Image (tube, rainbow, N blue to C red; front, top):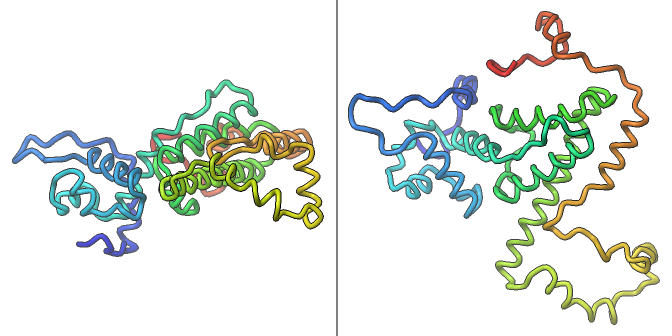
Length: 277
């Protein structure tokens, strides 16, 4: 078996099941295992944090653990399964907002928690957000985000769309921060030094008449306190969401008890994950 072994449809049916299982107790028979599943996943996350997701392979993780690559296959059957477990492990670091917060401070805390998560694990921005693993810590984050807005008067569709917009905004900031980190390492100059060195351009090359809108904004200091790649400023986005909530006249979203009172084949509510109801 190699890292590039394709998943079969039959294997995909159970792809995420193991992410929900409790860790198996160590076997008392035979030689003790040199590593356990948790150590394998933690080592893979460490490789990705330092070198990026493309550096993660069964061989690179095995080297980090000081074992043979075949040892890993007893814990994760393929690289795809390993990456699923890595995402779930990383999402355990997502600092979720307090349930008792009002929607705006809660959503701001959620956004900052997500930004901190992506800064700690920049490789997460390379994961396809449309195919996130069906994993408990990922679900916990999704649940926390939706819970913030579900009873604000927004429609069900608006709740989902708004959280998606917040997530995409935050991931954009995080990607910029990661790119800035890379440029600082390769070019040897920080953000402030880079822009300070561009003074000659603004004085001798830039023509205000060609960019009147930018000039108007610059004249009143609009760019003086602009967010750097290392800051998350979403006040304007939260203001927009607040206006949306104020104008909303959507039908109330059914309560959990109402959803559960209807047999699953006849309801529009999604089925619960085992053990998460």
